[in-house]
Length: 349
Image 1 (cartoon, one colour):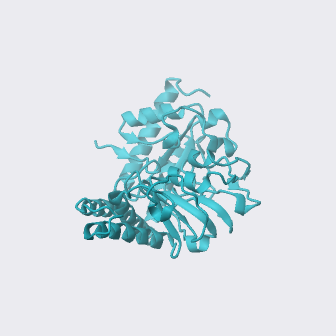
Image 2 (cartoon, rainbow, N blue to C red):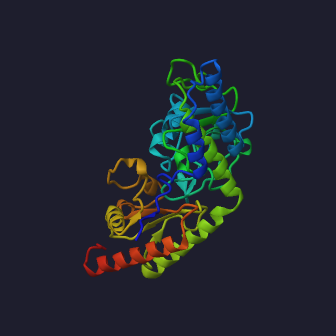
Image 3 (tube, rainbow, N blue to C red):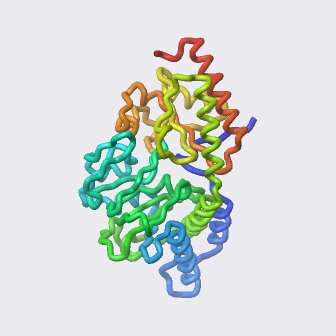
């Protein structure tokens, strides 16, 4: 039986629209900085993609700077600013901020938006935050394309995202900010990307990024994620029926429609991940950016879970192409594996 991919928050399959745009860009030989005809064609692809990103994010009139991904964008946006964040942030953000913001019932408490960073949605739990007006920076990487967002009404000074979280290629992302915002270049050289990020542009990746942005926004507008939320609920009901003591993180709060993070106390997350992998399912025990390190999630700690609970958490993240059969097969396999682990005494209370 074919494998089932349920780790979309780590990375998503490449969309057909992005693949087509990238294949077309492969035949473009010019450097976007060159003034000859070939260079102008390449530059045209970059600018067309920039317009697609701006339109999809509702950032008309804002600056869109292409970078290698959200990690680089976070450094570009946050380095030297001394901003505050909470324990819910991705490590790429936490590396640059003071973890001084408290979390209350899943909500980040912000007293000074202009000095604060708040993510739109959390990759591990799916928690969606209500962004305060005047916020300095938001990581919208997980939320874009899954929940409504527009830069024009969000009231945030800067946001950033990565293409591979919504069907674009890996290795390309963007920082978006209001024109006139002081953003000091971290990579200096030829002055590309309006002097904010030097280096010859990744034309192929940028073309795929723009196409993926447009397609992701179209999916959201078409209501495709409503069906995914229903599948997520079917999954959780099946797990809860088989293992009533299972803890579903943030189940009663605003979450991404595709994300379920749950804790089977006494059954380590990495053990579950390995067992399900052998059974043909790709899931996660947390953020994919922890480089395989087995440790308790700081995100779950910030939400009030103890270390033992955090080490027993797994994340299942669905995609728009996930089927009900995929979900039901996973739920049955998980419950069967859980039952065997109980019988064998492998789950420690």
